Amino acid sequence: MNSIMSRGIAYVIDCVCVFALFAVTQVVLFSPLRSLIGITDDWFVSGVNTEIYTIATISIPVWLYFSLLEASPWQATLGKRILRLTVADSALDMRLGFSQSLIRTIIKLLPWELAHLGNNLPQPIWYAEDPGFRLAFVFSGLLLLLYVIVICVNPKHQCIHDMLARTQVSPAKLKVG
Image (tube, rainbow, N blue to C red; front, side):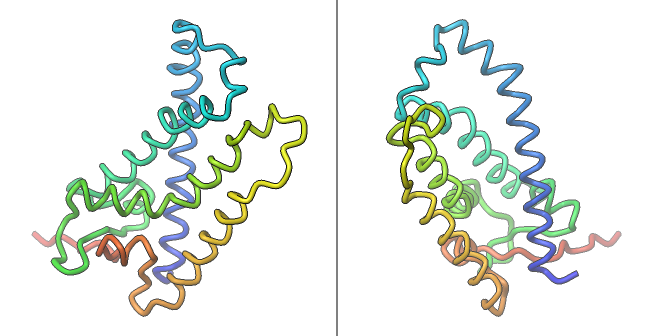
């Protein structure tokens, strides 16, 4: 399987893992906490409130999932481990530090964050009588398309987030001995 396909499949696996984590934490942890501190459904009518909640309960945990695992001794998320891929500093061929991994993650998930903004601001779509055209969705889709094009044409199959964070995704090195 080529590296572009492996990375894509690994990302899908990671999205499933993250969604499962998100669903469980929302139901088990955050929903009861909202009730305890008095956050009602009316609180979410505000796009700013919804965006803050999205960042706190979805974005930050997902950023941590990618950043901590890719900076760990595994050098890989669960999806990358299953597909036997690792992320390393492209210049030094060594494990990423947390800050390098976090920068990579934020750039990688920028289309996702733009989609959140489009969904939540100025008012969450599900509360808006006429949500209208949301330009953030266009930018999100175009940026995602650009990421796919770049990884396909780059000789090292690096994406924009790899180039900007100076990282490389490669097959895992077999440990001998």
